[in-house]
Figure 1 (cartoon, rainbow, N blue to C red):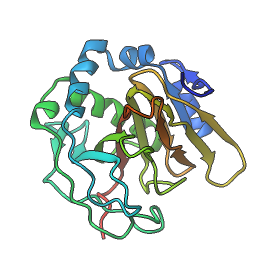
Figure 2 (figure 1 turned 180 degrees about the horizontal axis):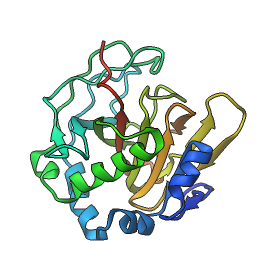
Figure 3 (figure 1 turned 180 degrees about the vertical axis):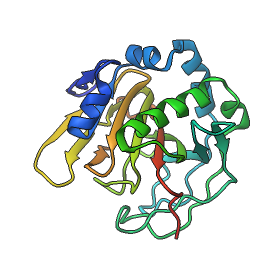
Amino acid sequence: MDMKHFPPPYSSAAQFEQQLSDLGHTVIAPESLTHWLHCQANDLRQLQTYWNDLPPDAYLRDGGRYRFRRHSSFVVDAQADPAVRLAPHRAHWQPLDYNALHGGIERMFEPMSPAAIDLPIWPRLLLGLASVADRLKGTRPWFVEAHQFRIDTAGGIGRPTPEGAHRDGVDLVAVFMLARSGIKGGESRVFEADGPRGQRFTMMEPWTLLLLDDERVIHETTPIQPIDPHHAGHRDTLVVTLRADSFMGP
């Protein structure tokens, strides 16, 4: 049985953008997500199958082997044709100011599967996020990085955010919960960047979405542990970041 957890403070499909504007963060329930994206739950489940072949993250500086990931970059511009364009494969880079553990190094991960990107739900999802960023920050092309993560507990503990509470140095962060299997922990924590207020909750349901105005809040996820010490569990997420002007680079 999972440890005590606080349910997410869900916002409806009609209200989440106002809450994002007011608070700097919002959480959308799976049924509201499908309503907002005008898709079916099965469309999202088709994408979920591409989390079973993620390569190990070779850059973990804490010596862990608990993180698996893929990373691809896109340019999303509703005024362009095509509106969603796959960018040439590139390294993921963050400055030390935003990632004290892994900042300052170019991390080249394996790209997302072409079959995942070719699913109709993928451009729909990116365009939906870009439309939120347009209304929040102003219409423009968005430089988008998509990260597929699996955190497992084969070593006893897994850390979704080994760098601790942080900002990503972008305009909008989207964290999609895809799956939790055989784990406890993994509590999401969101705090004002310049104030005392914060919230803590655990995303349990597949395709729960946490949206963050990265300028206004910092966030982290607590470590996960296996419910049964003899059987490893895992936590799957999709993290999509949107940044104005350019991709972040050295």
